[in-house]
Length: 112
Image 1: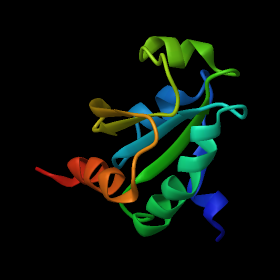
Image 2: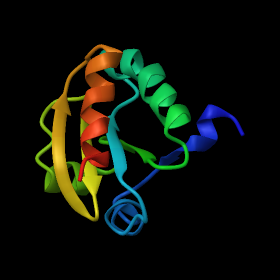
Image 3: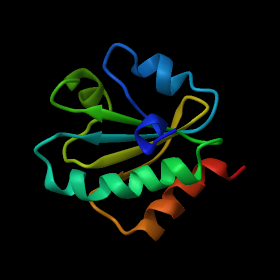
Image 4: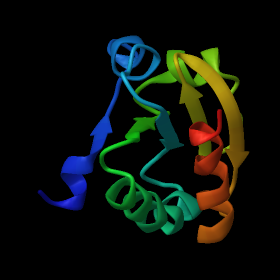
């Protein structure tokens, strides 16, 4: 299983089923192909997907192709990462951040 297989690409149509109704916490990366910082953070998101493969669902939403979901969550700049637990938004992280900050952000999903 490659790292690509650990990250699902969700759309406006399947966001609810894939993220909100997920059976484990979900990290959602809102991005676009033209976004430099999005490309820079992608390997960190992939590493987190690999390290947490059994306990975290990782998804990407292309904001150009899925404006309804981006709008519904007030995405104004990218990359923006949203963390969901039991269908509820736990936290938001905007912009390029170092891996340790990203790990601490994801860790919030596993706190009681």
